[in-house]
Image: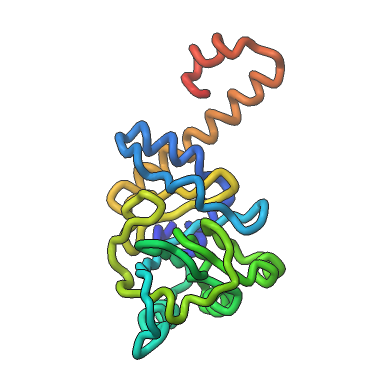
Length: 220
C-alpha cells in the first residue's frame, strides 16, 4: 500500500490510536512526540490522521500589508491527506483557525487541523464534524493580531518539533507526531501491538490475573 496514499491514512485511522503510537515511539527512544494536553478537540470523538502541512504565526500589533498572505498560500496548496498544523509563537489572543478555513481545507482534501493556539466558529466546525484541535476558543480574528511568517517548515507545536510531511494522529487522548524517518517501523509495530492488546483484553475480560497476563504478554 502506498505510504503516501489516502487509503494508507484510512488504515491507520481505523486501526490505530494516539496512545498505542505513543507507546511504540517510547520503545523506539522517541519519548517527546506527544503534544501538550492543552491542545484538545473541539468536539468529543474527533479524530484526524494525516500528513502535516505546517504554518507558524507570531503576534503582531498592526495590520500587515498583505493580511493572511502566507496562510492563504498554504491553504491553496493543501493536498489530499494533509492536516494543517499551526502554532502561535508568543501570546495567543486571537483565533488562528475558523469555520471558513475548515470548509476550504475539507474541500481541498485536507483531513483536519491541529492548532497550538485558538480557534473560533466552533458552532460551524462542530456542525460539519471537521476535526479541529486547539488550545481554546476566541471570537477575535487573527487579522492585525497574528500573522503567519513561515509555512512548510519544521516548527514547534505543543512542545513537539513537527516537520512538514510528518505523520500526525490526534484523538480524544491527544496529539502524536511520528517523524517521517521512523514512520514505517513505528506503524508496523503499532499494528502488531494492537493485535496483541486485543488478545490481552479478551484474557482479562475472563477475569485472569493482570500480573500473570502481563508476565506472559508484556503489555499493559
